[in-house]
Image (cartoon, rainbow, N blue to C red; front, side, top):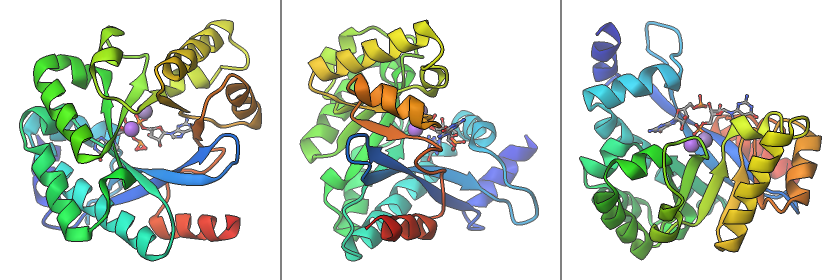
Length: 253
Ligand code: G
Ligand code: G
Ligand code: NA
Ligand code: MN
């Protein structure tokens, strides 16, 4: 309850920010994009982690205005990278409420108009559980996203309650292998089998596949050997302020 009322004021007090975690091509090592991750630092307090405040924002509906701010801010950053001559795709996390209780397409279109960033530079990340809440409604929104030219990634793949049928039905571009399968991918045969199976499903459906939570060169090498296209994790970079990522991009250029 206390957090709820503090969250309600947070947008007006400018307490949110986005950090960006690099995503790399496993073969070339090139940073081609970044996932935008929301941070909340109340003026009069310590930073609050998203795993604590996002559930509260979702239950209260505050995720709708907050999510709208995230979309506009992510587009503005994509625009800055574009103006700097950098080709960076920006991934945006979207909650179920934004799909089912708001006009996500209109919000994206407004941010697109404001910034001039082409939709192909933006990717929307959704979880499996979000998709299966209302398959019919999700389908309409996802088809519209696809028609508008946005990328579509399934986050935390393999952890939700879902059927493989939606892989065929929904217009997806990418699967993100959940970190829980990556952490022990080198030492645990079951995790390795699951990671390989996800990579194979993705590749045979012509989807891109990215491994989350890559922390070691051994994990990266194994996943690359099994055909994983992309990686994200502390090995390549932590979630960081955009200007710090700029430094990383310059150092690599
Ligand atoms: O870095 P990390 O602690 O940021 O992320 C924790 C969780 O919060 C992840 O599951 C991530 O998907 C989620 N998350 C981060 N930023 C956003 C956001 O802008 N919107 C939504 N809906 N979820 C987010
Ligand atoms: O959207 P998603 O649920 O995938 O959020 C990603 C979460 O994973 C964020 O909280 C981010 O900070 C965290 N994360 C990203 N890379 C790593 C990593 O290499 N190791 C660990 N332990 N966590 C990571
Ligand atoms: Na995500
Ligand atoms: Mn994830």
